Image (tube, rainbow, N blue to C red; front, top):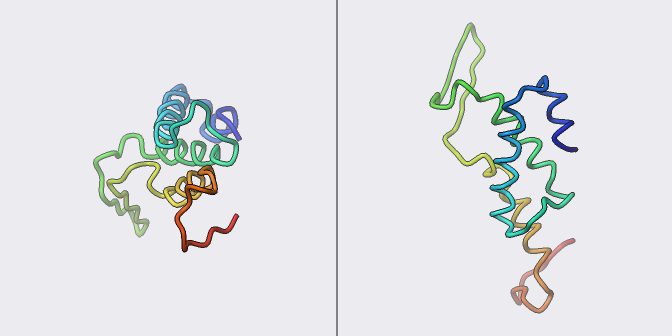
Amino acid sequence: MSLDYVKQLTGDNPQVEVIYNHIAERLLHRIKDTEVPLELEYIVDEATIRRFNRIGSEGMKSESVEGHSVTYLDEDELAPYESAIVAYLEAQEPDDKRKPGVVYFL
């Protein structure tokens, strides 16, 4: 997946590229890398689409229209993917730096 894929899903809106780059930068800062690894690329795609869909309703906690209800949480866009990010970072650690007494499944 990539920016082109996200643009196809969002109708090639010019804001999408800005959001995509911003989220990619935040992820790169979090994992302390220079390029988004292939196994984490889906996070940038999904978080971009999620953030794009919230444009115009950033301050809203919940919305209810004719029986349809939507709730937005005040959280970091990467928060839902924290476990995947942590697992990636742990997998990148050398074996001798892993905590003793902890089982790792790869």
